[in-house]
Image (cartoon, rainbow, N blue to C red; front, top):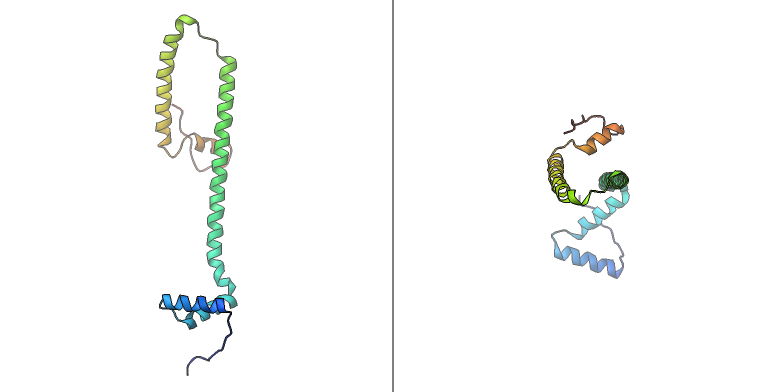
Amino acid sequence: MGKPRVNLRLSHKLYAELERRTAASSVTKTEIVEEALSRFFDPEANLVLEERLLRRMDAFDERQSEIERDTALCLETLAHFVFYWLTRTQPIPEGERDAAHALGQRRFDHFIGQVARKLGKPRGVSARLNIESGQNSDHTSDAPN
C-alpha cells in the first residue's frame, strides 16, 4: 500500500519557492514537505546542530577572554616597567651617551633574541604566570635565562 495522499493549500509565494527548488534539484515536493513536517514535529533533532554551535561560541568566547586578559597583562607590565625605569634611571652624562647607546643596542638585540626563542616554546612567561595565579597547574615553569 502506498503513502496516504494529503491535499495542502499553500500561499502563492511558498508554492513558487517549492516549485523552484524542486525544479533546480533532484528532490521531490513530497520529500521537502516530509522533511519540513519531521523537523516541525521533532524540534529536538535540530538541537544537535545548535548545541555544537553553542559549544563553539563558548570556546570562542573563552579564547577571546584569554586574549583580553593577556593584553591587559602586557599593558600593565609595560606600564609598571616604564614607570619604574623613568623614576629610577639616572640621566647619562654627555660623554658616556655613545657607549651607553651601543651597550643598550646590544642588550636590546639579546632581549629580542630571547623573546623570539621563548615564543617558539609552548611554556613561556604566560604559562608561568598561569601557574603562579593558580589557573594552570599542569605546566612546569621554565628556568630563567
